[in-house]
Image 1 (cartoon, rainbow, N blue to C red):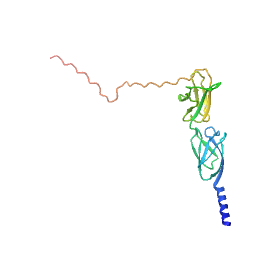
Image 2: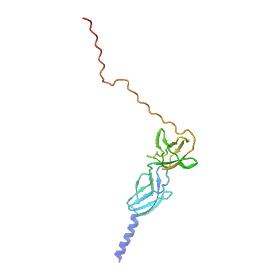
Image 3: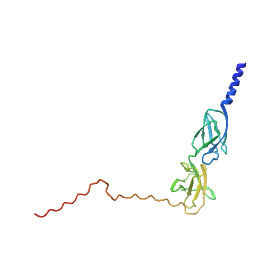
Image 4: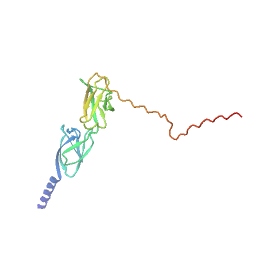
Length: 201
């Protein structure tokens, strides 16, 4: 009986040493805010994060890796002992609405960064900007018949409300016309001189 007991004890202790009950948090790398509904996968087991990005994943192999996924974020592989998991956004989605009328989505609204149009809204409710404008980015949201609004990009999903009235979008710079070459290309032959008329015999 003693060898069986020793084997059982070694198995139990080995399991305790080689596994981990992981408690951690998944964060947006640009904002340090928790990511809701991120999924962590190890083998066939999956757990999700709560509204603050927190999760619990019990009985994981200590020397292993797991996969982390979340909408609009780059898939990440991390060790099963990592408590803080940071994810980089891949896109930004704007819900462009009329101020005071949240049921009305505004079509043909531009999302601009400087003189670049990142996206234009259409019949869809969501307007997706890919790639993400960047950490601490600012964009201009504008549409005909509405007041333009400067927006600080935060996270991967925001609602932007535009007030009716105003001058719409500022004009974009026109491309400069290409200059036409006025000189003949180098190396082209010069025109032959006209022959001088000979004197009368």
